[in-house]
Length: 398
Image 1: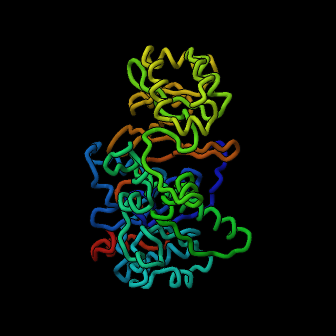
Image 2 (image 1 turned 90 degrees about the horizontal axis):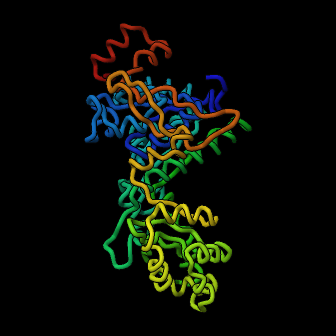
Image 3 (image 1 turned 45 degrees about the vertical axis):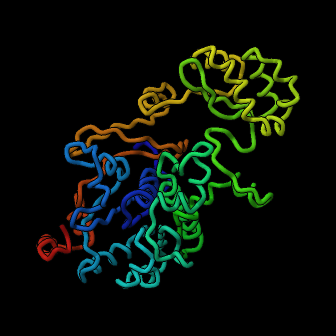
């Protein structure tokens, strides 16, 4: 690597699995942190068994989320396992886990315990509902959080059954907020030498995304409902049917609106009192959509793209995943990264979305095999080969 990385020198102990935690630690690893992933000896991260698809027996889902990490298989419920775990804690800056609140306390491994071993440790816990409150002991799942945060009540089309966001947004955002908390705590650690406890929950991380809907409810008492692809506060800002599909158009302000009407040869709409300003267009959005459809269905999506781009009107096609990965813009931004995996061969990984000019992120290694680095890590802790074999025999390790 020709340039240093922003998080070089940060050591992260990762006891999380499935999505929110691994997504968080993947992003930390991409920026240079050393991430040691602790997995249970019997099967490891549950995502290893998720599929199809599998690539040469490896879960495609697991391969996507766990690049740049080392894997150690360790049973932290055994005395020897706890001993190894605490040695790793003593050398780490950050500990990430997504156990149900209270689970680590039963093992005498919660924050109050581990900070006795390492007072500077940043302990990040990701859970469904947080450490406190009446729901703190409930299991956390993306679908449940989407429902209870209000996201499912505003997703879909009018009068449709409940619809979740197409991606596991509660899990993913839980991971992003965890990373945000970790980096904030790490800056504090570098300044003061003081560690701390960090929390992220799926419910709160989802609720944080309801910026428009909550502001509407707080100010008016109105309960927002699903609007398809339309925007709550601007119009037209949505998908519109074309001759061969749909196109997204963005004309949320007056200048864009006027350019749009000229581009589609519908200047009569500017003069119509029902569509004069944003408040009027929002009030008459359904009627506006019908008027726009009359014009847009006369040409193909590609025809309109050329017309609107020339006119300076924000617009875009609606891609499926094949379209996305064949798109020239996506290709030009290094978002499809090829890695060589020891059993799966050449695999694709989604590239790093945040670009840093001086300390760029790097994807340098594929997701590890279960326990791939166990011996290496234990040797660094001072364990001899014979001791490692004994630990494997007593089921502390794989």
